[in-house]
Length: 116
Image (cartoon, rainbow, N blue to C red; front, side, top):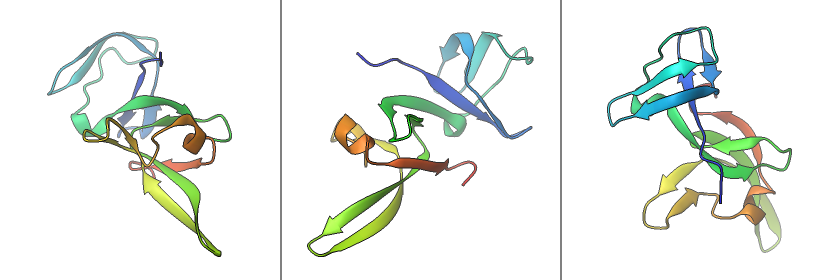
């Protein structure tokens, strides 16, 4: 069973908020009731809220929705470097382009949609 974690990108001052407790998530906002962070309440729209995939890259970095990942794709005699954004796919019931731990161990997190 994977650990359920979220992070929120606070545009001002431009940093990630990872550690919060007693979180209420609605379709409109994320409202942490108590934070281990010097802000009383943080509101996040759905765009700034990222869920942990339960996977880590080859350097042990946790992979979240919205992360930009770099990986290699081999086609017969050539190898192509790709950078894609991690997103949830309802039809495949998984994160793409990451669908399993084996693939995740061969990628590197290089940024995210908010800072890249």
